[in-house]
Image (cartoon, rainbow, N blue to C red):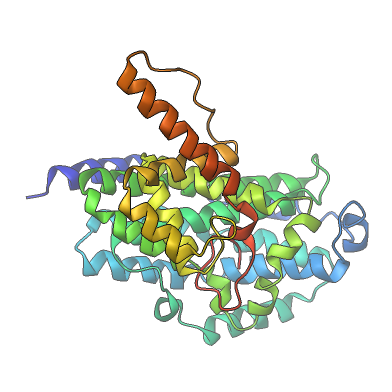
Length: 361
């Protein structure tokens, strides 16, 4: 007999499956508009070769859907999560299948030989078995957390790529459709994560582990890993912002966790695991030890991060009784200190030995 939790998640998955919508042939045929990479990069800091490589990265990464699907299915079988199997096979996998073709058409329109692209795709498929490289865990909540972050990043990446084309062009419209599906997948994975965590708060550990060890799949695909390594430095050149990407990732994590304390714990663990700066001039290990001594401080860290990223408003209401006022002003003073010292840029700088940053590479 299914547990109440599984019944709720099953119901959610079954509601999603009818939303399946693949890219159609008419959309694909409309894309050949003779765009020149040299013309498209005029308002950016990218070179023509950079632009071509960015779309090559999108094409190759999207072409390994089977391997990502297999990874989710392994976790579903290991933990008896039929709902995850149903979602991946009934919605996510078929929804993803059409995402590679638009990027192939863009590259062909740029003058890249289609046969060469097929060779690249075959080489990528033969060069890695992604399920053996996946480091974010196979527990269903680890996989849905991974999916949420990965789809959030991809959604933003396609938004930036779409920006190279005229807004009224067919190519822009088709990329928008693909981007829209990635945005939907982000929400679906986020909701699946939240439902599991609500049923079992101890699964926070799995979410933290999945987040701190996260890497985009293309880090493990030999013939595009060199392109992947450039993506963070490309984002500003594509008229984007790495801070904006971080903001979107943290926003989704925050909605899934629904608790500033949990967000604070995750941020500290992430910064410590990846050796990124968190509090300016203070070693992460010391910060972590201090925060663990005062559990309530995790919530303050979460709040400070959300405020610094513009994801929540500053506290305005002042409590009425004396004890509440003392607690309020003490908390406010501590948060002001954390806010002032919080090193957002430190979260984005690559350490010498990256563990798994919340970013494109």
